[in-house]
Length: 160
Image (cartoon, one colour):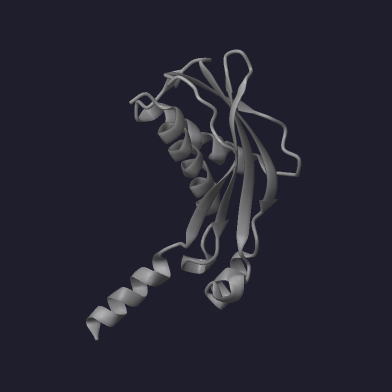
């Protein structure tokens, strides 16, 4: 009985954020990069400043703080937020993620350019939140989208 309660509480507290990366233009042959610049383009939709700041913070932390890259212009990551839908936290809480009620998402288009402005790859990343404690925070979708960009960048362009 105690284990059932503990498992139930853990599931209730866990936010159900996820992300996926669609590769729109497969990576072209390229050298590995050490210096990376993050370039933000003007969003195509209205996006609250705190969402923009959170997203950039997650990506910068993942790229620079773990030592995968340094700040530089060898590779430019040009991104634009093309969809921002925080969904309804109340509906996520009320329905517990059943039927995608209240689901929120953030969609970001990302272009990878070398120093000569040659496009090396193009992706679309979507972060989503479907449920969680008190409906889950939209920050989880923003964080997951940023983490997916970092993961793709390190795997595709990082020095090995």
